[in-house]
Length: 428
Image (tube, rainbow, N blue to C red; front, side):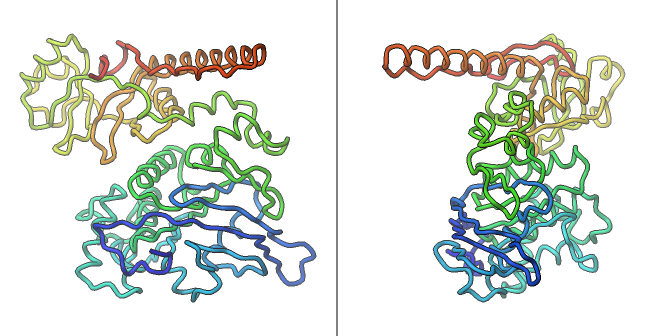
């Protein structure tokens, strides 16, 4: 499957990413002495997210747009799944590559469904297949099809518009997705949620994603690899986030990393990597008396009410249940959520925003999976420091006797906490 054959795809057989190679790619504009992009060479591995990060005007967006020939290269070669992009009809090439931009770029006169259906319609899918794909894509990005398919972009929030934009970019199941600062125009909280959504989607779909941003923290969170670019898209460093944080190639890269590299380590680990806590839960149509007894039996001051799809709705305490005859509408709304795809940095920010000892963690479809606590993060940082100290000691021993030491064993994130909503207990 190549970037130009999306019409062979079925919704039950998702297309995975393909390798992209840039070989001495140059872009010169008439009348300019210097090239906008001066000879970029890099390999973007199949199925990975590669983030271009650099200052405004450095050429990162121009470089990305040459991949789908929205901007034609002056010289050099770009191959997608081994095929020369210049040998493919530009329209056919673009229909086989997803493209998501800032502020979504939706057609304002078309409904959400028709926006998402744009590329499948262009490549000749029949109406039944398109309708099924639209609903599948909306559900995939966390928008209920029955609620949103007939709305217009002006009836959506900024975050919802961006989700529709991603759904449209993925609708024909392309192997490659280009994303040009797609979350740059939304507020920080929505931006974090959209980033989590992209991580979740990528874990399911395995596309090759080229993502442009000027935000290094976003690059660290999303990228399997980061290309730090200077003027004319000169590659200053191209490596994993861990390697760049640990060893910036020069002062310019170090400037992007900033002075809080150790804190950025929180961005390199996900909530799924630590042991979660648990609290009593019940669905909204459950028994008040049964839930009251569950809280009392486990000596918990808080529990969670979930909807019929096990998504968290409200925190409930015994006091809330004193005169309650139903669990509907009872309790305090859950305001801050993180997902299993969220970083530990996201979790810390959520905990600080709520001034709480615990924050709810949701799974891939928004379902409740547990709680993360301040103790979780404190334990993780402690274990990380112990691991690094152990590694340094072994390195010192290697220097002294010339023998290889064994790798240090990281802490498993086990922890206990008993504060804040939920009075959490360790997950089994």
